[in-house]
Length: 334
Ligand SMILES: NC(=O)c1ccc[n+]([C@@H]2O[C@H](COP(=O)([O-])OP(=O)(O)OC[C@H]3O[C@@H](n4cnc5c(N)ncnc54)[C@H](OP(=O)(O)O)[C@@H]3O)[C@@H](O)[C@H]2O)c1
Image (cartoon, rainbow, N blue to C red; front, top):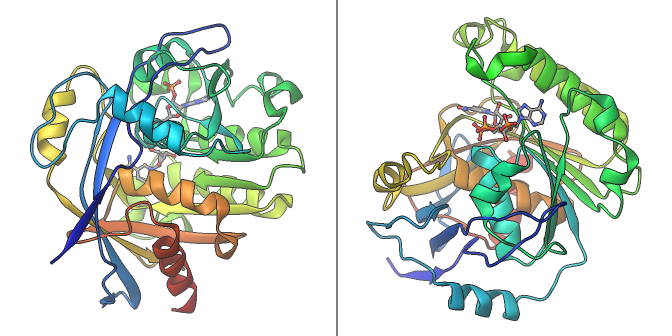
């Protein structure tokens, strides 16, 4: 099978937050194969090949190649600067860090809302403050989401979340109720009508949280609260796209286990399945979910739509908008 190779969200150079921060340089590389027309779950199947990420300077093994900073600079010079300013919520998390990486690679400006802005320093290295801004805010606190955060923002991607079961991450009442319901409600309520699209990462199973096996996952309400957040969002009136992934794989990438994670994921084949109606099951690569969020920003077909996303072995759409459009459209046609 013939495959072409293209860089996906790659490395970055510098950024300064507000105030200036030091950042890391994620490196991603993706091999893209052609779209296969196989049908599964009555949906078009598209597969992603050999996707991996380096959010540290650690070695990458397997099929993934490093992208040097000179290559990155070249990438960014050749990419036209975008007029978008994307507000990213959860940029320090698994999907969020990949979203930020990809936006940087595409030369799309972003503003991160983080409870701990210092985390951006560790993750993304030094970036131009025009390209990447960091604002300290907690979505549970309405007062943190003041209008200045949305100044100039054209799109929003929300990837925030916490654990489904009690954990250290629930400290200070950072529970699913507070993050997936109150936080999403606050974020959406604060979003000005000028925002062209808000993309929310939710979860499969939210419409059937009283049924097994979802009721187990929902023991502490995570699916119920995600659905409440979704419903509020859908009724608010801002153009939206909801992405409901299956169980997430690939990442989060941290400085502590980066090499382990990369060794575990590099070389895996990831195909993308997209459905509607909360029927899909299975796992979803965070890399695929991040790409789905970014693609959804621009595709008219995804406006005011809810999709389930999972990934399996095979070839994929990579970062090709047309292939993603076909996938999203096919899900609607099912
Ligand atoms: N894990 C799964 O298998 C799975 C399956 C389906 C759906 N999902 C959903 O998919 C999304 C992405 O998952 P993930 O595992 O990639 O994310 P993650 O690593 O858990 O990251 C969550 C992000 O949310 C941020 N956050 C948490 N509470 C916040 C608050 N009060 N205010 C602002 N930011 C806050 C975190 O920042 P801090 O560093 O400040 O905590 C972090 O950046 C989440 O909505 C998750 O629930 C996950």
